[in-house]
Image (cartoon, rainbow, N blue to C red):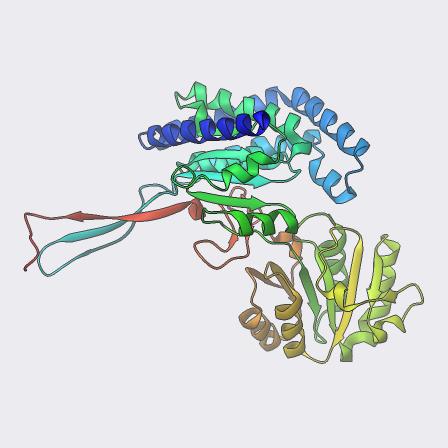
Amino acid sequence: MTSEIDVKKLVRMLGEQARTAYCQLADASPEQKNAALLAAAQEIRAQSKQIIAANNTDMSAAENAGLASALLDRLKLKPESVEAMAKNLEDIASFPDPVGKLLAEWERPNGLRIQRVSVPLGVIGIIYESRPNVTADAGGLCLKSGNAVILRGGSDSLSSSQAIIECLHTGLKSAGLPVDAIQLVPTRDRQAVGEMLTMTGIIDVIVPRGGKSLTERILKESRIPTIQHLDGNCHTYIHKSADAQMAKEVLLNAKMRRTGICGATESLLIDFDAVDKFLPELIETLITAGCEVRGDEIVQKFDSRITPASEEDWATEYLDATLSIKTVKDVSEAIEHINRYGSHHTDAIIAEDVAAAAVFLNRVDSAIVLHNASTQFADGGEFGMGGEIGISTGRLHARGPVGIEQLTTYKYLLHGSGQTRPV
């Protein structure tokens, strides 16, 4: 019981500090915020060896604990990963400031002038698993958008995240900004998550970034509005008009570039009229690359190495080198399948038929829909947004990559000359 009380006090203290820091950030200039970001990037490069050493500690513990391969892949930091974190902070600094933008302005017949202006969301709680790079990306994005943030990273990445947080704090100090603007929950105790979800009036928005179980828990327990980041059961659909070479190259990248990320393709849909033309080479390419293939009855006939796909497979995010394949009669059936089994994350069509592609793009109910490109482009950095906090699969406030623009809301400023409202 003492431990539980201590965790509650700790998280509440972080919240109060974040609230105070948020009020101070309101007076921060774009130049100050950018200076903090650039100094943090420089410090991350300077501390690269220390960050890698901390990550090695996390990796050893995770391997000994039997962490799944997909999570180990997300946890691992390499020198190029550290450089990418620094570069992302520099990219974020280069963007126009999203706060204080005049979004709309009009005047009423009584002379009252109304302005809609962008403002930060406030204090953001971000709960994520494994990926320590999220610590830098989320901290940088929240700072740029004027938000204070409380980061609750995965227990398996605590050492890595602490090393990164120290670099971010160095940047904040050098720019004269409060270090409490970016805080890391310094405990592995799961009670910390539960406490964050109850902190109405202190935390304004919760952003979950992790597996399905984490997201479902947060959606069930949170008393605070959330920006949803559900699982990535992503599809690639090969239309009968597709270019065969393009289809092979895009599918291989979409599935095998990195199997453990939320934008990896988990199911392939292919027109029945195209299976003889495309499927043998596609299957051989996938299996040669080390991918397990599961398929419906038609697909199984093409190769004895294909195992039967079940109803459960169509709704599964593997996060591994496994792909399910289903034949469909046309684009309408492909869309119906995706909207039924997908997670509204990212789905792609490979087609030369522009009309079929247009139907797919319009009717697939996902945050990101692509034509003739890999689903692994589901990434804020690839969108030119300077990184992301996650991919929102919800509909309210933000959808798709959540970057600095999506971390703002707005308020109305009214300018008068003594107007009063008639009785």
